[in-house]
Image 1 (cartoon, rainbow, N blue to C red):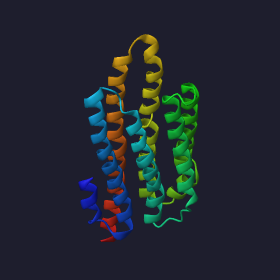
Image 2 (cartoon, rainbow, N blue to C red):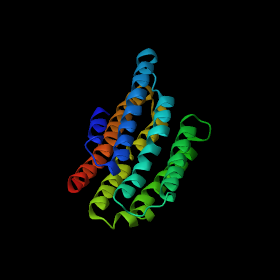
Image 3 (cartoon, one colour):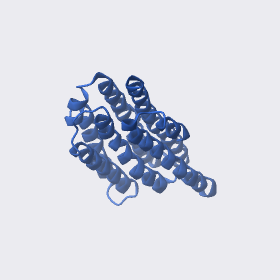
Length: 211
């Protein structure tokens, strides 16, 4: 968070918002991880609620980044790009949360979450935002790199979800809690920090050209 905030001051004006958002994502995650650490130490339980609160705040901010980097690059991007990604994000997260808390059948929650995730992947690789990004090589490369995080990095979450469904059936409840914590922690580490670093890299290169 400190790194992104310092680098924000080194970037040209059009990239400052993107780096501010990157700092917000990691900052919000850090705060929630302090809370989650407390839950784990006191109860030994996986802090699912805090994780989803964190994701509901940080993932939409990450979706904003796709729109912001198009704008920073001077490409004509409509706000509808962000709103479509936001809807996909909410479907993905709310479906998963409802399933994990048994508000709906866990399998149904998994399916709803997957629908949201698949739509986000489609929008990034084949949707309007992808078409616009392809007009500038540096932005297109950043888009593809961010897209790979969404595909492969985010794939860890449904894997953890499935494991959470199956583990009670095979008598692995305690192992499941530990596995989910390690899995989600590593996933957040990569998906939030690396996500921000990709944006920082394209901002740095573009700022150097402008300077």
